[in-house]
Length: 419
Image (tube, rainbow, N blue to C red; front, side, top):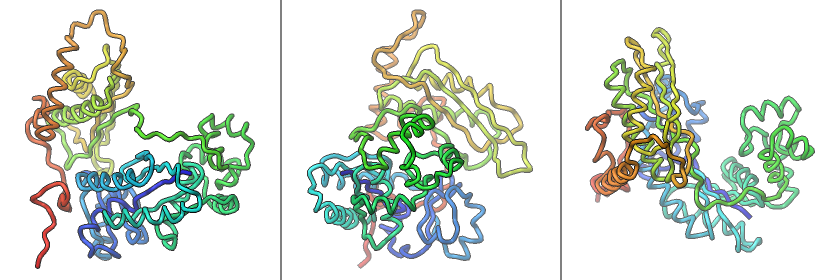
């Protein structure tokens, strides 16, 4: 049996842990620079607030309905996530962290007749120790566990756990479960399946396996088997290395100055390169993009990107910054104000066994030692303590006008109890 533990409205729940007055009140959390909605309480959803909706479109609604607004506090959310995952790891033989607020659970060794009680007890334990409500789905496969977890969120009477194992119960659920909500079914597959009148997960399970494989490859066939109760998606305790690393940001204001864009791109490269080194990979291709504010229709609109195949794969911030700035010069247009930019590292491969260039004059060993020293110092003394000159010495200001405190990671911001 597999379990899927999913924190309910996670970012909102983190804010509510430290401000109980938010219970029952519509709450939203905004993206970087207070741009768009990235999390909503159930009350906010009922008001019609959509994921990704720009905040400026909601000003009237926020005031009229007394909506609580928060800037994204990723330091707080990351720490709360670690606390939740730590409790889950102690309760089961193994976990597979799927995202900041989701983890698959290996329930090997838990007796079948105890699974329902075990799931409810685990949900209560996480809520009691962290304040975060979670929904646990338990089923014979990971795909069915995902569906069970969603049912648990939809029906509060399940009290934190949905144990879905009897064939008749699974059939009843799948007959009403939209195919587009099944884990792994993307928009193009939904469109293709609906053209063939496949609208529910149950409709999908009735298809011949050859038909599924011919149109959806082995990935779709694996999903088909999972929905039919055959576990065939492996359990990974350690997340796979990323195939692509991107650092993108929406600016706090429109920018038309090349030097400022230069510094921002350098900062994005540094952040992406650090992630690259942490997974012991090298980058063979780098891309840079910039674009204007699409919400200002009266202003010139522009989007451009460039991609460069590197002569020698690298994880060096210095080399990647030089390449990125070169690409930025190619896409930058004077007189245009930009609202967003980003750096994408792709063609990633393991650092071991990479083919080098016969004519490469760079001292790779020396460069590698330098990057290790930079990472070690930043780990010890804090991020951005040691930077390249291209990044500048001051982090760029972000619009975070609704930021809550870092209650669990900063002694100066710890909760104070008034007596």
